Image (cartoon, rainbow, N blue to C red; front, side):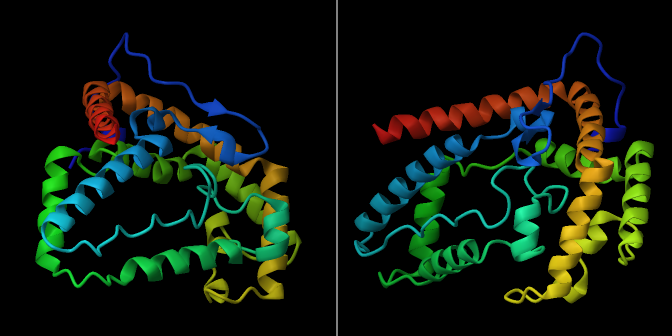
Length: 263
């Protein structure tokens, strides 16, 4: 287990990727530096299609022509890695659904999950596992490398304890208290057990979420948090540059194999 945010010193001469900020008011358009080393959404899709093709062909040879790949699960939360990373940020979304996802997205997700859970081919689990293993040998599943996941997770947590973010949280908390809501940190509101029912959005939840977004905007909570993460990630990237470059090269090689199979 590595410790990316507390490891060796920054390596001089190595430049970490910059952060990307599209719309300063929309976190979904922001991009953290470590994302440069992770498979993109389009690359993930190419790999998924190739793997489905390989497994489908293998299952047909094994006598299970009826087998079909499970449908990809639709996005349930944010549209990008930074959308919803710091909590609810869209005033219109908060006014309609509070801290819950759009009901239409929830239904689409549930339906895809249900279809994927039902295999009408009569295939046994062993046959499917064998075909998946065969596919793995040619095109491994698309996933972030361990070092990418560690940097991503640790920067999020460490940024919460940075002085700038703690001050933004303090200002946000005071703002919420002035509106009648008592929370120490933004995610405390997001994770309030009173709002945990999956298919119920109460008036209290909506009112809380609306106040939450207003206070976040007033004190630039998301941008402050994001900026703190950027600094931490860039430092970690310099420390683990070689491992990250190797991970990205491996994922690109997998995409190349997947692309070739699709032809």
